Amino acid sequence: MTRILLSLAVFVFFALCVYGMWHGWKRRQRKQADLPAFPSTPAALGAPKLATTGVYLGTTNAGNWQDRIQVGDIGHRAEATLSLVPEGIAIERVGASALFIPAESIRDARTDRGLAGKVMFSDEGLLVVQWENDGHLFDTGFRGDDKDVYEEWVAALVGGKA
Image (cartoon, rainbow, N blue to C red):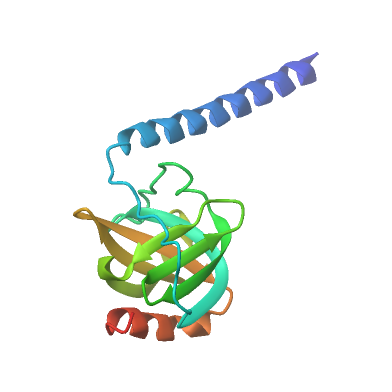
């Protein structure tokens, strides 16, 4: 009987934790509902200058690596292909909507250790692009399969070649 009660108590505790996470996610979505709409991907994109595969980690409010944007499916991590095209940065995500960052919106690019709850052991484990949309700054993070290309990406984005 004691084991049944203990098992039931653990299950109830687990259910309350899941409910709390779901409730927090929904509250953050309501709080971020007034953010500007994210740019849509143009119908035709030029040939990619750079491309790499990896994982889209998420988008946060710039300067706050934990404040993940939850509007729509922007906050969902997904396998992705990151492409630098003449129009900007195209992020094609598997199982989620595509994202697009216009070239004129890009403000900075850097390698970093953490973003959106993902922390790497190396200080250069993530590629982070800072961009502006309607006066609001965002950081978008990507963990590439090949981290050796990060320098090339940062040079292309910061050097104004984008």
